[in-house]
Image (cartoon, rainbow, N blue to C red; front, side):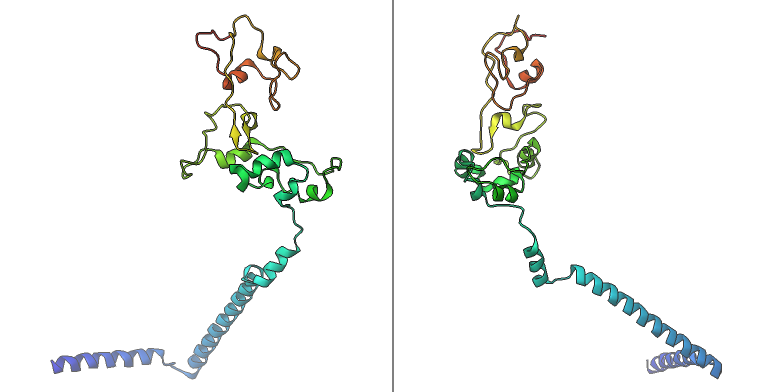
Length: 234
């Protein structure tokens, strides 16, 4: 065993001596070349570190953690949103049911957009201002109430393609008190009658509710069911 250890030790020593001979310059010129290569390597690494340091410094300066500067930047912005309580001054009929409804957690400007300028230029007795109010679109309603995987089943949501397709949400839903009125059934036969809009127009015999638009019978029938056993008028 001791001979084996001596043999292995001798082999390692021989290998180290052989490696040292290969690394040792054969002449002074070779030594100078190797020193120059080592200096160039060190210089290259130093330049690389300087470039990386400058890049990191620029990145950190723009995106790094600067809580005080971040707070100053936000504080310098001009507010675009007003508090919902300001809406109450002029819009009490809408505000009163909203503040008592399930939608009270959805502030006015979630649907109506940023209106700080509108609130600042108006008062209960002021004429209409220069701020144009955006019309609330169905897309805003669908953003919360469109059927989506992962939403709690108890949360009100609908399949837009199946839920009174073609009708606007606001025709039936009042977003201020979070209630909905089911479209009434058609209480009369349809045979030998003219188009729906003949009687059901803004100035007709039985005007349609606000928000309805004059449409074809097919659109009307999307929401309003006809009595059973009554033929559909072509």
